[in-house]
Length: 256
Ligand code: C2E
Ligand code: CA
Ligand code: CA
Image 1 (cartoon, rainbow, N blue to C red):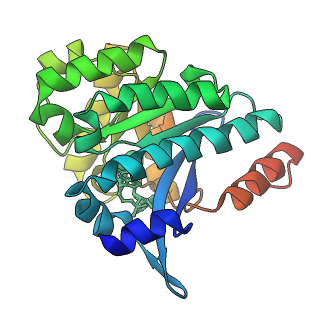
Image 2 (tube, rainbow, N blue to C red):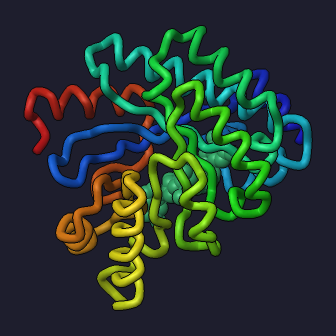
């Protein structure tokens, strides 16, 4: 934890960005910000290793705030460069969701960067939402009121109550990568994906498949009318410079 405190102070933390595509037009509609920790030389540590560590300390608030600031800031830069409808999404941890600070901080970040609130999406995992559904509901409603969009992350891995799903002000359902990733291999996953897509559409929310790695998986999602797709098939998470380059290439048609 003290190494992480140091990292936060010395630019040791960074965000990488993974593009999200419209499954029909194949255009980049948004970008997910993912946290990285550069420790020492070339060592890069993934969030699954260090987020649980910082979640047990008060550091999670600083890191969480920093992620939101950074994500809003870079997104505003992309908007100013002409990609003015690009969406940005940031991941929110269970502990952040618990605190009223989150709302204040999101409001501040939006105001400071002058970013249109509807371009910011906050991703909260299904299991976190369901753990304390009543409390989550309050926070989500407050966020919704300031115009921010809400995505349920890793959907299909916990047991959502349909009752809550209807009551939660959700805009996007992200189908967990372990499910989307198996549609070619087993019939079960394919059925689950199809069911989640129609559930999303019945609720009037956007369906998004993450972890799309093959053309076959994408073709299936496309046929099932999934709205958005994200995964190694299109791009790994990349630096902000590389993401900007990708946007430019798409624009000039250098890239199919
Ligand atoms: P997540 O939000 O479900 O993010 C998707 C993870 O899948 C990312 O791992 C991403 O790099 C990876 N991924 C993307 N495309 C593919 C693919 O086609 N195949 C496979 N197998 N994997 C793919 P990453 O960056 O290691 O992040 C892991 C988790 O850490 C995230 O899962 C998220 O829950 C958490 N996380 C990341 N950044 C933050 C953050 O800023 N704050 C918080 N609280 N959590 C974060
Ligand atoms: Ca996510
Ligand atoms: Ca996920």
